[in-house]
Length: 248
Image 1 (spheres, rainbow, N blue to C red):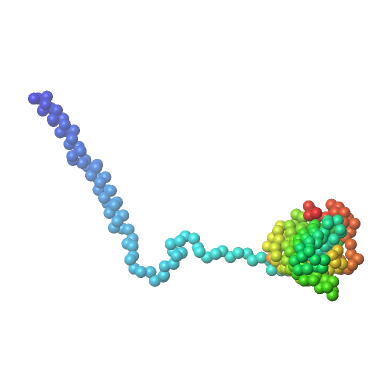
Image 2 (cartoon, rainbow, N blue to C red):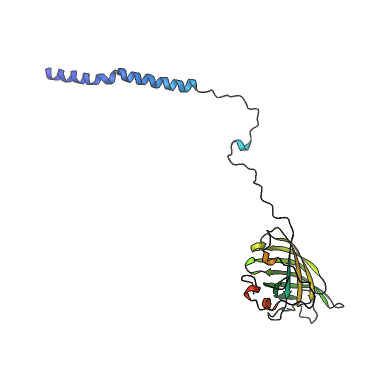
């Protein structure tokens, strides 16, 4: 019995600290309670009054819906002068008579490709490549009207595409429809001057929407006459008389 009583006494003594908090625990609890009270009672109250400013989507969406202004393309017009020469060494033009008639007739096709020289005839630039569709034949004038779609290739500088009327006996204007390289984003028009059909043509481009043309392409042109010829060096495409990687 004495052994049993002593065990109970020990158990009661061991449980006493958990039943009655010590002065240290009470002090810690009071400090926590005080800090919680200060958070709730000293916090600035939230106003429920309605704001006079209307709510907008920007108040809840972190990104502005207003588009950023895009830089406008250059507005100045630049002139580019080019000679097209048919030197009878490219098998051009090829006349495809879809009408199967001896006389030129609506729908006949004319694929072509000729050489390009700078306006001063001192440099080989590249080639033209495209297609003409016969629209109308004028027997009394021995002339034709074509709808032309073709491109001017300028080696590493890129190319310019054009579209419009091609008349064998008079000058015309075609639309510049686009380009690549330094001509990317280009627009404008080009004047086509017949010098000796179909061997010599002179073009004046009026280009918009691009940066300044490379200095190599900006030249003072030779006046277009039937006697004009490219320089021997340009005709031979010597390195100093041709643009880099000119299209051949």
